[in-house]
Length: 82
Image (cartoon, rainbow, N blue to C red; front, side):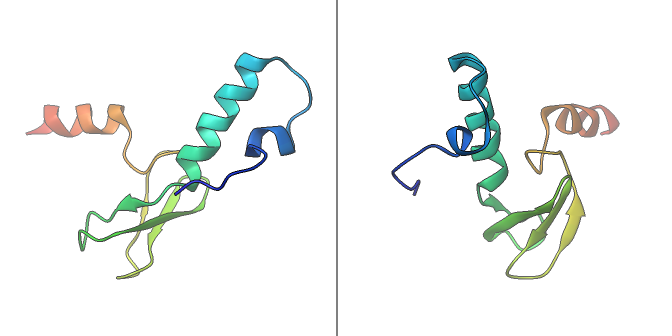
């Protein structure tokens, strides 16, 4: 559930235009979201730092995308290997 109030992008960016502020807000929302763990299946994966993700339930730590743990490019590469 998102918090109400000032968007994160407005707190950290100067005035560069509404399109860039909205894009920055979407990126920040993706990085702060909680994702499903590929190891245990629980929705408990949070970003540790840029590109590193960790499950809070089982402790599984893995490398993923900068803003999302599973990128569309990685999914495409995995499909082509099968």
